[in-house]
Image (cartoon, rainbow, N blue to C red; front, side):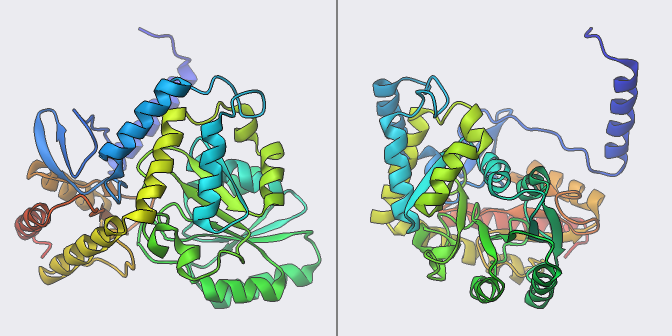
Length: 398
């Protein structure tokens, strides 16, 4: 038995018991194979509606082949941090590809999207600055803002009146050298899209730095190029951050922007400086994913076709799916314990979705989040709808 400090053991026992009592304790399932449109857990096959693999690229043969070939050429790892000798030719190719795809001068690749936000925000903002942050921003944005030590000013979700009032007050206070507005491009729990044109009008009026976390927009909006591209604002937004592990199907993250910004991040962003770079295989697979989005638009088109079909069917049988504008499709139930039970019954009946509860979403807004993707067949989605109808009626939800 491992040694544990009595104080630590008491803290953990009390904390875990509290989580279980509130229905906030999550178990982690282990997949027997790949994370595709169907998955297998403990020998049982499930329709997979829980992954972020929007385009089905995580198991695409072309990406697997690209990763294998790069691994044969460069090895399984980069061998060092980027600033010593861990920058391989494949990393440079990746960053050039990302910049072109996002419509910017340059880009920088990180080991994860979370690392992007932890590194990029704190590399530019400090205790002399202020950050206006949407109230529903991702946890990595919140942590990145805290790490920067800037004054964090919470803005009501997608409320342009509140944004303008707080931007005006921050500017007129004279307390801050720089002021940033940071927002998700697509909000991961409700699937709504940032009001980019209105945001840019306010940003230009008050000289705000604009940072868009497009983790759930990249590969989905703007013909795959993301939320900023969707609104034709690639030359206006200072930071376009994204992940390489959702629609792209691999792992990693990036920031795209001006050459000066990327030069600064390569010398100041701590995850870039102090952690080994992306594996060569991952870099090559990402390059291939971008090429597929550029040359085969049917992947993004199929994603939207499946998402719209699934949303309509859920509404027809009586579920509250909120106001999503993207493939993210919540089924909102409210009570956390009800959400946990509902999710487990769906899983038991062959549909894999996970409960989303506090602190990921506000208390009392528990939901299961469906992520239909381009790899699902219509037959899979129809079967999932049958299960939703069966479980919903059994539990008196619909």
